[in-house]
Length: 206
Image 1 (cartoon, rainbow, N blue to C red):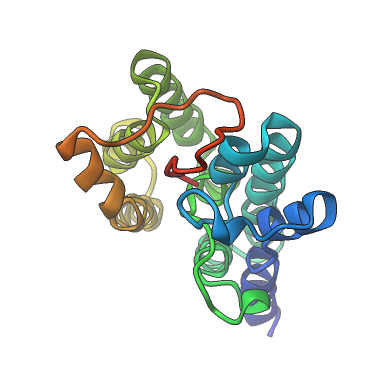
Image 2 (cartoon, one colour):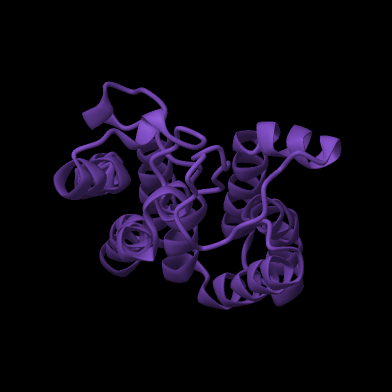
């Protein structure tokens, strides 16, 4: 019973669309009508600046970290993984937005990784940061981090359950960035500037 409750709680927590809520509260707008339409922190940052973007990223990461850590500590590693996966699914298709488009799971997935396999999370964050600083593409940084994720998990020596989870997470992140991949190939993807863009045409990666 506890196992199931933690997993369900993970989905409900993951369904909290902080990007949508905070923009509604402070700017009285719908983030889904701007940029990529995603509710994640990158799209919020691009359109409304870091004062809203950073809190959204932190809250999105926390809603993945909290249920995963509770599952690992109080039940089992498997419970933590499944609770984290549930949070990621909730972030992508949030109950509180009637299962419509949410975010792209990067921050939430990072929070889960920090709870389940912290060394992999740290290494993956290093990959993301390096790619981002070189390219200024948040989407490219997320995609290459997703590719590196299962490789790093195997290299560091985590058990099979964590390897399977990392492979699922990486594949899901890449799938959710498929439109970004097309824009990258076409040379039309916008680089991250960190400031609100007047055109609001940038694409997000979270």
